[in-house]
Length: 360
Image (cartoon, rainbow, N blue to C red; front, top):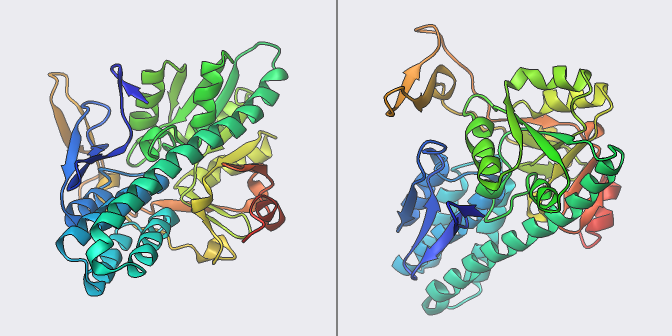
């Protein structure tokens, strides 16, 4: 996607000894890029959410492991760095998927070849993610076209939660990719953007993306979505996901489950967009997904721009009060209208998933 007329991916190689990312903790107030030159740089960037989004951290993890092979291509170092990167974000399956793919590829190669092959494989993972996101956009566009046809030229209102755009992938995005393609095709769309407490990825990142692309949008407080659904002002919900289990249960940013419940109660279609790398075929139920617990400061403090132009972090809660901060919740498959994947759209059932991925 373009920022101020310049095309960016969310991760890119810098020569053959480093790679770049966008520091998402600085958005929307400042656009800052970072150069990562060591595996620990990559681990820190993922854990601190300087880079985030399930598909994207898979690619960043792959590049981090590739950097490790330049220093020490031994089996022991490969396993050690693999495990270090894997533990940074436990809920998103794409990270483990990408690291596992890298490890399998490298263990099969001579140590002398591992540095070169690792860089090639990391680049391939990034390229494939971009291609899958584009395909998700095209399949999701067909869904939007079908719903828009019923509006007779009126604006189609779409609600989304968290950020599942190009900042969460290498490019295009998952949940936002169909919206971008619909907007570019001239379909009148408007996006209700959940603020997504506590980190505000909707208000900061999704709104930043949509504004940069010229897509009409409005930021909502997280608890307002159900009200707008009751008022008939939401035509569909589309979200991304960090992990989908074999039965169709969906782990996504905390608050997604409540939106799915409201959508079900108001007969609003609820779609989940994802690449196949997000499906965890080894887990049969969302109950088995590890849910990341993040630091209390994300709930107790907020960062924003001051009137004078500076950026500061301030306390917003009662002093001394503790806070719990689960990063994700699980939406049962029964609340999901369908999955939008790079292979097409399917029901949120084991049979639906296997209709698109019969090889599994």
